[in-house]
Length: 338
Figure 1 (tube, rainbow, N blue to C red):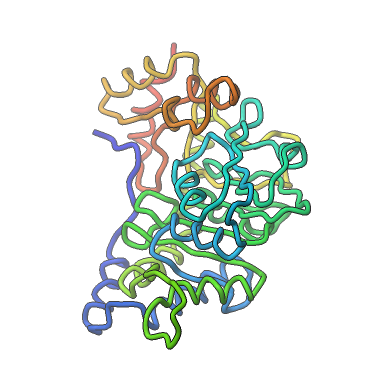
Figure 2: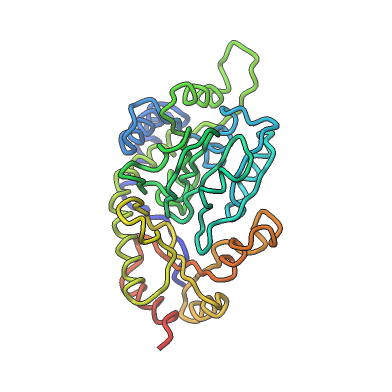
């Protein structure tokens, strides 16, 4: 079976993990600090403006916490991972769910000015960046699926008040199964998140929690970050191969060419019959999925019709660096009607 998703791990990650195991320093220490600084360098931030965390959901939760969300209206799209709803609820916010743009997995930025809110969470879904236009509300840039994408030549994560990233096993890179990163140009926000993370060995009674990343995770993350450009290049090659073969894939609108530079976290094929495509792929030994099913949508269907339409008309195809050309041809043979 050709998996739908697969992490790209090899000898370098094994060496990195063994380096930490042999050091006997497994918990958060110098590897985490080095990972944070190297991540800053990748994004174009000064050192000290990133905080490594236990996972992407922790990053979102702490991003909300430092923006003082209690009983404030938090706007986010209904076509997203349920982690957004969970984080908003746990942080004490009041959810305000909106629809996506027509034929797009991303929300329409005009929605922000049309709906009263205090904080917005703006995801770059499937690696497709959205042109962010900052208004008077606070903005969390959710880059969990878009590390390496750019808006006007500047990396995603730097266009809102804060940015969050995920290093889950099948994201664009991983830190060994779980992991996340919080970033901001505002050092006060960064220091506040770091304070929440450092829950122990403090001489005060402030409520904190253990959101730490381990050195073992960070060492794997550092190895993956070095290889990320090659990962993104291979994903782009596969995406373009699919497109040149005639597949109709979700992508950046042509009018934003040169302004929005996507990364290919997912290859989302548009089709009137997703189940037929998934069954055809399964018959060839290929795993494909509906990327966001209708039961996963976070609001009543009649309130988010664009999201509902997208959930009924899309299939996510395998797209990861270790996918071979032979495997790609097998995938295409199952989805192209001759």
